[in-house]
Length: 232
Length: 232
Image (tube, rainbow over all chains, first blue to last red; front, side, top):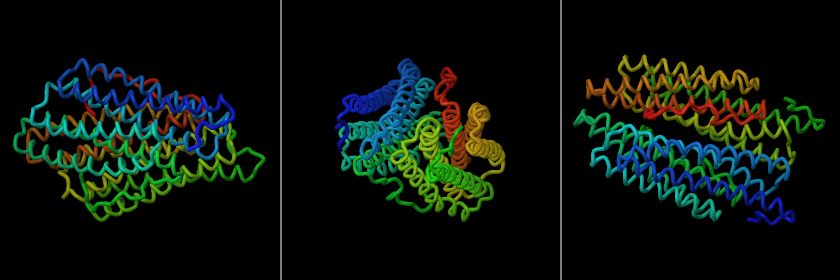
């Protein structure tokens, strides 16, 4: 990657700045997810409120980064690797913003529920840990622009999907065995779904990293089409 | 809008072509959603299979349009309205592709369910009709580049969200009253959720139309923050 190797010092700074902004946005989103899960697990509705309130910071960064990228295209007419950087950032911030939205949704569940049954806790905690780790690695690979790791992380989304499937089947059984748990179980199911979605967004970001580094668009190339896979 | 007013005939054609491709992609996605809902309502798993299979066509168009937009930026160095057109298309195709994904999910439910209870049909059919209408109007406003209508459509997403809330509460009651309906109800809930998401994506596309026409980024500007709104 030859980003930031221009004779124009100002241009290098602009590219560096927008890259830093997107990493900052990633850090913020990661923090939001961590707090949202903690709010849910510890039944801390005040922390949930804080996360829901702070989502505007994520949104503001998205708008700022898109604006900065558009300005760079208009003024600097980037080519090759620089253009791929700008395009991949324009795409990635959309996914980061939606990860922020999912974190906000989890936070709102933390506000509205009155504490989860402990058996439901455990399953959700595992999925939450894995998705947080996936997000952490995704942001790391964004920072390093490492296509090989990005490929591994994108592949690991299948595991997240499988974990979600197992959890949603467990919840279905749980609800059928004891209908009094339906409301709680649905809350857990929505949170699990948000986590599964975050995995999808991480995968998307990893695909943009591969595009940035290798110039190859790998989206939709190796997603196995399972037969009548019905889980959402 | 002064799109396609260049002295370079070739450049005009490139802009027109990528715009047409995105409208074609919109048409395809609209068709996919219509068929997915029909498959679900008429319990037609073969039609469901067809929709799930055809999703690759949506994905292929997404990749092609992104590539065409990147080429235009690299070769033509678009400015002002042309640049906004290209950026708004790059953003919009992501939402169109995800509408396609949601249609595919609905189709997969059509494949896996053994027919919905008729009471659940009706509620879902209403939501489906409204979301299809929202998508139809969204694609229309994309074609006309009409910011005023785009604003109205974006606002109507609140109604879709409200309908989804009502439906999900009904389903919760339904499940608690008769636990034998849990599995079916969850299927309906996932489909309703997909429809609600499609509403979100339509709203996003409308916001890109406003950006394209007026040069204003209206995202995140007037979304009311409801207190402890917990529904997903």
